[in-house]
Length: 302
Image (spheres, one colour):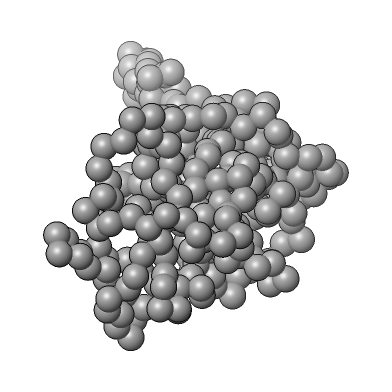
């Protein structure tokens, strides 16, 4: 069947318009740029991170822990721009140590709180050292999210230590409030000896969040005791500290400083290691976690 010339021309024009429309810039997304700086990837919105921007970093390992989370291994790396969390699978356990220089290739992804890197490859290419220039941040800055994942410094008094087969977690009181700090456990170390010490810790600031992924606290992850400096050691004889009455706890004092150990007498203890000290005017409750607290005369922390 033969068509008039005008019909053929009309069909050609329609096809040409369709082709131009299909190739119009409005309908075609440009390729995602490759991110080569840790902070650039970290500071994306969660929505943008979900697009899977390519990432290629050369950075230094600040923390690697294959045991801390049952869902995945934890890896923090740092370059000149800052730090970011790299979400590694639980297995295989990689031969990574703090100070290793790694080449990270992957994409951005949604983290529990902030964007993370989902790696396709993490390869050790050398060894350096962890930066000594940690950011001395306030508790307000740590809780705001502006310091998320970053290499931070905090000072405080260690009030207790909890041990697992793989980790040691310190409960630390700072001037801004309580913080926990976790490191890989060295079974040759007597961690109880750090209780009541004033310390400085360098580590990656990680969020504590609720089921809605809202930050409710701060947790610091540091690779080893090399990043913990004892500024003032615990007292050799904690029971030589003048006893405080129960009613004297948490009262106003001029020129306040971080509270350390106070001594008292337990009046009652249960099988869970929880004790109370009473006077005529009040009662104080504490957890008897430290091994030295198994004595009749024991210590509490304010």
